[in-house]
Image (tube, rainbow, N blue to C red; front, side, top):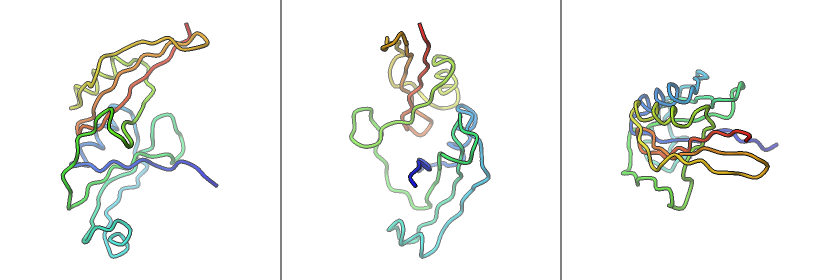
Length: 150
């Protein structure tokens, strides 16, 4: 069997970022909070003295317990690199929303920011997509998108 399970974000302030995703994107807790440490975690992560805390949030649009957004903080954190839209690697989380402009306003009013401008583009078979890139309060890049049939 193969199935997608979760995406992990390491946060400077896990509680704050968890609250942001719950409020703005309606992610919901599945009561899977974590407070993990031990030799097994050190071996798994390769981090001596590893201790992580956080929570699993079920993503909007899914009724089951998966897939989740896993938001953790380590006691020992390395300095991060600011995510950039054109940097190699995993770049953004995309959310389909009812109204891109309203959701962008909600992202901003809850500590996030805009990356670019809201644009609308024509797609094949009579579809039109509206998009914008934004950042959550810790700088992770988000894509907001909405679709309509013309």
